[in-house]
Image 1 (spheres, protein in one colour):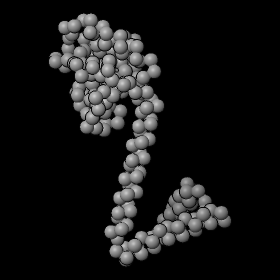
Image 2 (image 1 turned 90 degrees about the vertical axis):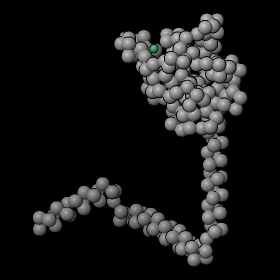
Image 3 (image 1 turned 180 degrees about the horizontal axis):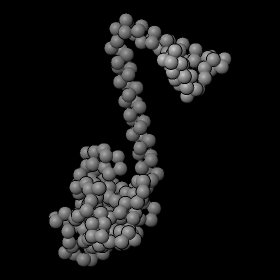
Image 4 (image 1 turned 180 degrees about the vertical axis):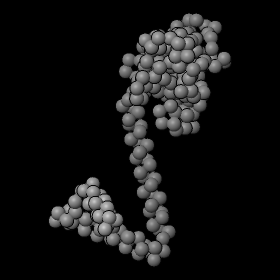
Length: 210
Ligand SMILES: [Zn+2]
């Protein structure tokens, strides 16, 4: 899968966020502008940093193995393609940098150079852990629920008395139906849906034959 460096698109969720910076999702080639290192010492430092931080910072795990499409295109054997799973998330200067966990392979094997912004994030940013990510998702969910409840209250305030009465009647009706179903199940009058379907089908066949 390929996402241009600097894109706000997220690999795992397909969502965009204003403060996201995706990098290292190369697909089957390294773009011309992202190839080559003039500073070999920096390249080595970047690889070392990635290897050192890889211990415990693979936060997002995707299903299955991610194989290098560049190696695949070159027809390399499977064991040379380094299948690694997941993403690194780094917060730096109000941005969130996301890259595949095997980005080191692209640097070492295919001379990929992500440019100064991700490199600065690698050394100066805060590497997120899975716990950090979970906490953030929970907060986001909370915000979403609160926003929805607020919208619902506003909607109710804007209703005419007739609309309010109609909604209350619908709620009562739904409750009544649920109670009735429960009662039917308790009494054994309601059988499982697959059985109902079988009975109905048989009945249809019989009526057609008849
Ligand atoms: Zn490769």
